[in-house]
Image 1: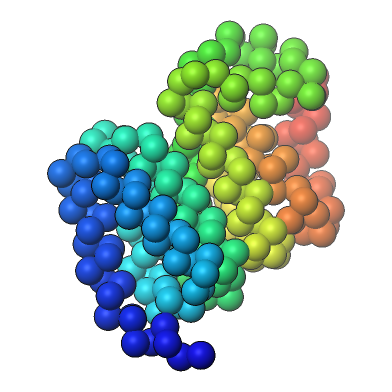
Image 2: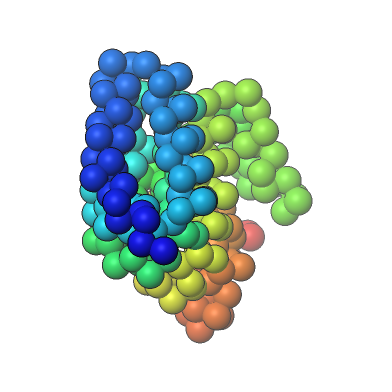
Length: 219
């Protein structure tokens, strides 16, 4: 029904609770508020239908925060963003902030140098089955990278390969071409692999564009 429209005026105050909790560095309150709003998204997706242009940039800013925001809150923002994409894919795809801020924020988390791996050549020699072995440590970087990677998978399947592919390719190619930052190259490769299921058709069509990078990694 249209009951969600009656509660639409509550969205802004609810978001202000999240913003105030983060500003006051009350991670518990911020995490609880975002978890509750995520449950609302699951139960009544249309509740946030007209608020995505306000929500998207806020979530991107939380995810991208380098200081002052606890890791649990940043991961909570990732979970909520993925849930919103699954609940409201058509509106989510139309947001300019998707390519402008949210995807770059996620890639920033994926590209962060892991704290539990050795030199680049040690990572490169891992078996394919160990691709996520360096994301299983106790550090915050590993937790954030893992959450961001699985969000890329959820987003690609929720939004469709065509929409996700065209928004991510500039980020992925730039990362794969970065000869001076092995962690960024590694992160872009992992993100590409996580998007493969949702973007399989688009990737097949554009595979020649990525083959030189993949061959370079395999050497």
